[in-house]
Length: 124
Image (cartoon, rainbow, N blue to C red; front, top):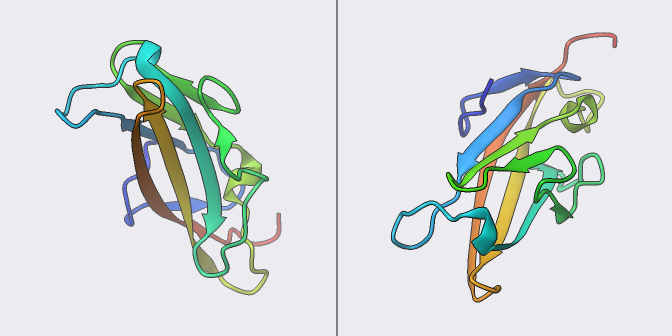
């Protein structure tokens, strides 16, 4: 499953997949050889709590992130610890994945936030 902004509900402890294509200012895909950095921060929107220690973590073909060599396609395979709930009482909570990247030797910078909801599945 690919996550859609503000429309996706994922079950707690599951392993969905987030995908996006990184593009330059001319809407052309950024090739891997031009990419300087690619980091991800995952957090609970209400509290700001960082989830699964993913605070500006490199996902440039590391840490469950894959970047295609020419198409600009980024894929993040979430792990069960990425879809935990921060609150023990909220039945559903909003999470965000902040993706930040730089290219052209770091002289160009981009960012995007994908938000999704994590739903309590009961005793796990």
